[in-house]
Length: 325
Image (tube, rainbow, N blue to C red; front, side):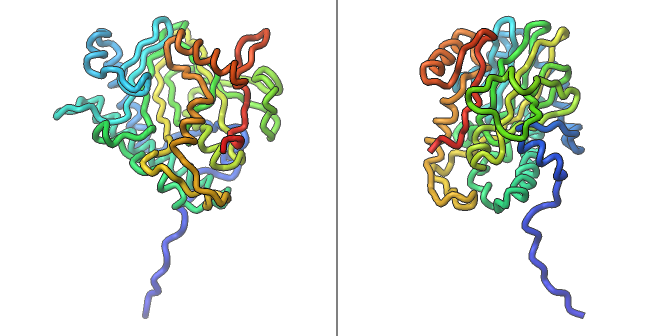
């Protein structure tokens, strides 16, 4: 009896159901339970980063010097938060327990978000292989600074009663957010369509907390790649009375290949991905920078018409990333 050789399936089995895919696409956010062993890696990492944040500030700065602005190492914002950002393993012959746990979590979280991208690909009729150039080097924690990509893992310690982050949307593909206490809020609207650029975040919706579930967020790059079929998810962090730990893994586009073919995404163009990434990064202010730096960035955005002021304070416009070339 002969056995015919069958081709492998074009996609892995679906992880999200149709309702979850629709919610993620229309709101830019989705709460969901994580699979094992990712849940185990989360608990290990939370315990180790809790120990790290109890160290004296000088020790934290020495072990993980800040670099790349706020994009690498230890960073402290008085009366708000402190955080440690991984984009590659530290240059040491003996990685710490925290480094090893961070590397393990990175691999599991990246594989998990790749599964989510696969489900979105199936819904949008995008070949799974289309993501390969965008994820080159992103699915495991790079061994050195020379090998790093824009993707990052960030461990936050928000201070009690004051630790917060202003409303914003992320710049990358997908972000996984995990918190130990309420604080993360996402923008929820009953309308399936995106609000116009003139609508502020106080209209036609509400800020809601999805704690204790982890949350997936769509970023601006994925909105742009999907030609607006997937919407970036506005979110913020409000202060928690007892403080809050948070793990954030941001899967961002690899820039190892400067030019990117959009044909698999339905657009017959080859684009300068490095230039597109720069434009997307330039369309937001850095919510994790020092307050003075944030204010200066917001002022420049107001001058460019990317941020508006009203009686309720500064709020991001829902600019359409499709407008980028």
